Length: 335
Image (cartoon, rainbow, N blue to C red; front, top):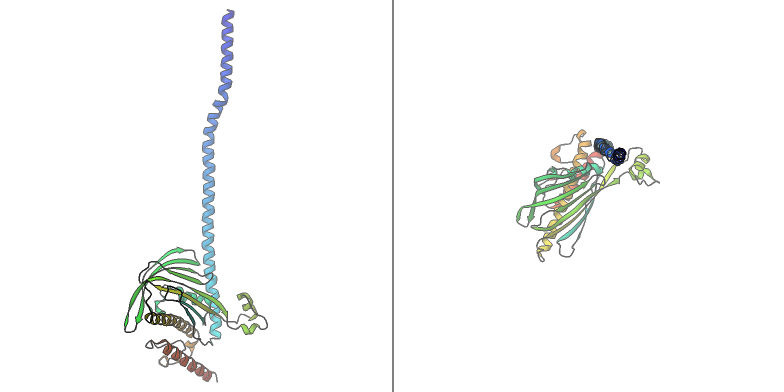
């Protein structure tokens, strides 16, 4: 009897000890399964918050881009109105410097002053349909936007460009990647595939020009805000346009052929700049000359260039004559 009681007590003790050992494990299992949905909820909440934050960030970027675009348009309209009130401007010939790096045909550095604000000039240069302005562009074969960040775009463009050499002429395909950034008014371009041209690359840059800076004397404004303040909002803002261009054919011909090609390339670039000046003059003419009773056939506007004049020197002489005639005619009207 005593043995039976002792056995029962020992068994109960063993059961108690096993229960004590098993209890923490039994508690851990359900608590772990309880924590799974809680952790999942926390994870989903965190992911949802991040996604909302990302959406808000994207929306804020889009909002900033729209606000910046609207501000640029308002600022450009304001600057063009100042030009309308005072459209006096005489275009100067572009400054073109030619160097010949080893193994290339030529490296061109062009500088010219344009009587329009930087945003207006930049709109001309980056316009997808600018072949109506630049006569050496026959057609735009393809254009694809690779990156669009609002003020900055990366575009893949393929164009058919016109060329002339002595009695021959034709077209050549130009396939380039264009990186244009309105924040610093730059447009970099580089050839994608090598063919007739081994290297064709360069960069457009547009800088502000304080045309009426003398109104601020003796102060010298360093920013647009200073210039606008010291001129009372009546100071015109023009542009300094720079073009750097490296041209390297797959096979550089020996002299004197290379001399001819270098001269043709230089004249073609000069015609490109003259086309830009003509478009700027056309825009200025639209701002002011619409009220003048000019006969269009007389071509008194300084921006009109006879397209039959292929020679650059003849075209520039024609422009200067028209500029003088326009100034004399304007003085006559003001008397």
